[in-house]
Length: 455
Image (tube, rainbow, N blue to C red; front, side, top):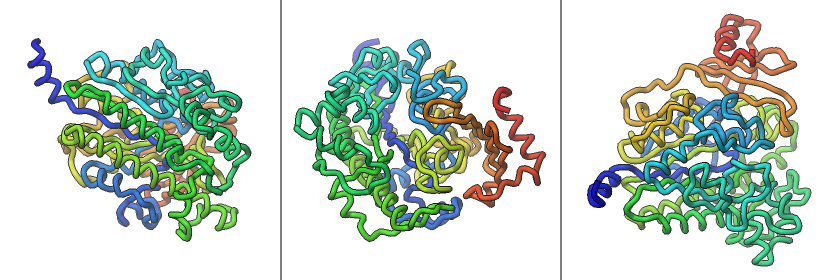
């Protein structure tokens, strides 16, 4: 193939911008009132105009879930296109197995520039990210360009005396490390603003790295860029400017929560502030894609590794089988994608792998649990899968073992040491009433969809 032929062929292959925040729960989205009502909610006072425009230009999946609501397992499932029990990463204490294929490798082998910035969490327990954000294992995993950094907790734990990742190196180099360390120490549920300047806030730094990578990509080759924001993961640290924008904004109280409303509302204000800041950074990334003249040929995907309970049932964080933890956002826009479509298809996060490869004209047989969304995205079909699964085993971050199966109307939770829980989520979106005893046939049917070891 001549160079001219190669350029004409690859010009038809879309670029992919994958926007991937950490801990964005799926019902905290700029949904229309009729969509919010399906979650038993009124629309939230969120400020995410960039994401709203992507929703107008693409397909929004309202029933997407994570295969496992913990950072490293979720990201391993995504990379491999496998469900939790097959992906080889039981928790945050396990590195991604280098012998296991990734969809990033498939893109790289086909000529894509494969970039990533932010917290990849594919070698999470190693606590060495390289001071420039590159270790050789990233190349083995399929990346050609990367600035990988630690997450919020790992950064300050590993970098308490010297930097072990590029973000802490940036703070040390600019005399800001002690400011950040002092702020994060024993922060807990504090919603006081950090003293970091806005330009040093981690997601703003991550976005600058993303823009720099975009500028480094050749114009003639297709590219994939994954932007792994560290927010809105707790603790809820925001800058003073971010905090000021949300003073006086009221959010609905968490479900079945005993916290004072001023405490829960302060946390939710900061969570919304982090989402708004991510949205602003999305605008900067899209502006660079547009500057390159590539917006019309770029698939834009927005999702998250898991959600956050945000006070529901007096719980915070992830690792739970409940809606706030397992449900994630998913929006896809780009060439050939239907516009302004809201889909209730049953989607799992690892489906992004097959979807990206399908856009690129590629396949990965090893990604057996990943189903391409292109039929739904292009209008060739509406159904995707019949039952969704999510799971988490016992480990340092989680002291129980559970698995869920859901079909859009019913959701079953099977947890070791507890009675089965069945919710008719079509009528009970907040998962209030366990009806397992009243509907044993539904419990048995969904339990049959679980791997035998989890029954």
